[in-house]
Image 1 (cartoon, each protein chain N blue to C red):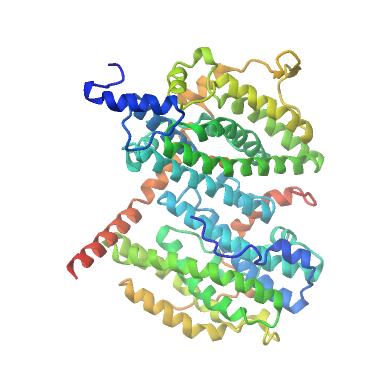
Image 2: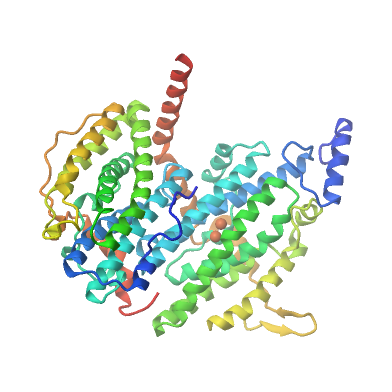
Length: 268
Length: 319
Ligand SMILES: [Fe+2]
Ligand SMILES: [Fe+2]
């Protein structure tokens, strides 16, 4: 049932901390962006647990959320080292405009089809992102990516299976799946717009524009196979990497941070 | 005969009795008395339902867990409980009742599940108390069931108990961290233990002289110790652990009894137990309604998955 195919020697937040590697400032800023993407998506997926259409999906969405949370923890732990901070300092004590996630990840779950649409887009993106990042000149980023890539491969498989089931299942599911894609699609453009946090990190960061072609080809293939249509809606402005967010992020953070902020300095 | 056997079943019945006498396992294809089958289906499905409903009180804190590490541990735990539910439904299915039927009984409020999950989790410390006390009581209840006479049940319990003991340690660790923390955190831990202690003790069921079905279940080797014996074991385990934690168990009658070699403890408020059992606990209606809502909201998803699988099967036949 557990999806993790990763050896126990794979990198963890604890091993990053123990190794004592300090991220160069620019690398840290870049890692915050990636870490926030994973954290915010994990938070959304956590909302499904005990609410999924069947028990197997409680488990599957939980697994995907847990993997994403693992990526977030590694990336934020590494990033935090640049400022002598911890993953929790970054997750719990930054304000909304200080979050650097792309907007796609903060969008509400909607119905199951909308969640699958978001997860499908995210997974196609993550697979090519982490594959490219495996070759990063920064060894910690490369190791985090090497672990993540195997996991997001499974996430992609999961969402493709559901894209096909819902796209080809019944009239109702087809319509809902299309609506889900329509709702999420305007947020795909932002994933490939220049990442202000990647500037000056040649060989270390991934230039998101280089991932676009692969994304377009992969999504087009599966969307067609599922009998669905690529939405024509224009991309929203985006700007998550610069701290601009939809109105959905604030309430999400309020929930995520509420207890930690009520007890500043406490250990849990 | 009372348990539904007939002359034709005699050979099967003799073999069944021999299996029990030899402490051997009964397997799905073996002959078994109808009462044994029914009791098992009821017991295993109730246990499965408890795992599923038990996801909710802890799921309540996933989005608010106060550190990312705790969030990850809690997500994994709640997911484990879903996994336990799934193994147990599979074990019950080997007795001829399908999962959809059992699940339907749960979401229509016809099936029982452990009353403990009808209590609410207003504070983070409840994640510690549930792990320490509720998973702890579950372990005391379930470890003996690893030797239950019905094979699929016993094997499921082996797997589940391993994870439950992990959960208990994690719960203990949450409380320990709180007790070593700020004054507010210590108060949060104590207040939570105060609320969960008695309900956890009631998880073993009513006192033995008030537990009509226990005797037959013990004869069938699907219950290995009496409710009161298990409760005593649990208290004996808790007292030293509470000392390490630095929490006070909310029962002034707890005292080591040299003669018995056990801790004495006070009477429980069984009226409260029966209130919650009767549906008048803090969250009874919410728990079932929530699972039912998820099930109903997901109907179109399951229908789509079925239609898709059927269409693919047809395609394979046609080609
Ligand atoms: Fe469990
Ligand atoms: Fe558990």
